Structure formats: structure tokens, C-alpha cells
Image (cartoon, rainbow, N blue to C red; front, side):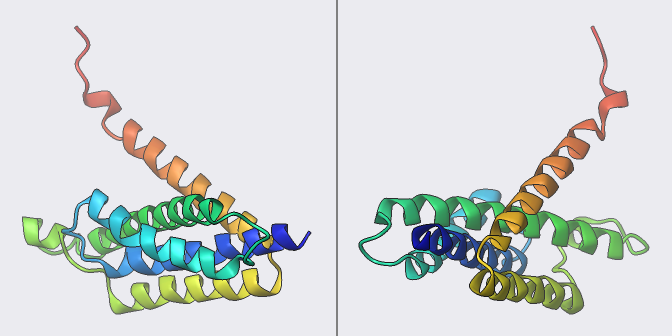
Length: 156
């Protein structure tokens, strides 16, 4: 049972690291840069939570990298969408699309990351709920993005 709680704590800490990295990196950075930036911190956070000898280190590599990458992608997507909607009244040029999200939104996502880390520290299995919520949010946003231009396609 201790190994399960350690894994849940590792998931929570990796999610928190990914959320912070995803919102702090500039929007001009490509997706692969976000993944490369989030994965090592997720691995370190997950490895710090796992008890030595009980859980293999390879599991920390896998869990930490995947959870941090998912959280970073979701945080980046949400922050970019909010910054885009915030600047809709302004000019729609290239620089407006690459605007950094507001400080309030950044602070809100960092606060959510801290809450996930603390809740996973106190009640480990709650990190599984946060992981599933972020997974669902990623799936729903990518599905909505795919349907966005559905009516504009030309059938031949």
C-alpha cells in the first residue's frame, strides 16, 4: 500500500511541475520545447516522492515524464486560449496571438499546481482524480479543435 501512495504522490508532484512549466514558458516556444522542458522536472519530482528500493526508478521516469508533459500541454493550451480571448478586442496581428497570459491567470494556474501538490501529499489518491481531469480536459479541447473547421472542408 505504501508503494501505491508513493506513486500517487509522484503523480501529483509531476502534475504540479508540468502545470507550472506549461504556464510560465513563452507562447512562442514550440510544443516539443514545452515537453522537453516539463519532462525532466516531472521525473525529478516523481523520483523524489518514490521510496528507494520499493518502486523501480524506471517507473519514476515513465510516470514523471508523461504526467508533467500532459499537465504542461493542458496548462499551455488553457493559458493561450485565455490570453487570446483577453486580447480579442485589440488588433488581431501575430504579436497579439503570442501574448503571454495575464499575471492573474498565471498565478491562478500556479496556485492550482500548489493545491494539487499539497492534496497529493495529504491524500495521495486525489492526484489520480487530478490526472483524469487533466486528461479529460486535453481530450475535450483537442476534440473541439478538430471540429472547429469541420464545415469549411471541401468534399471531393
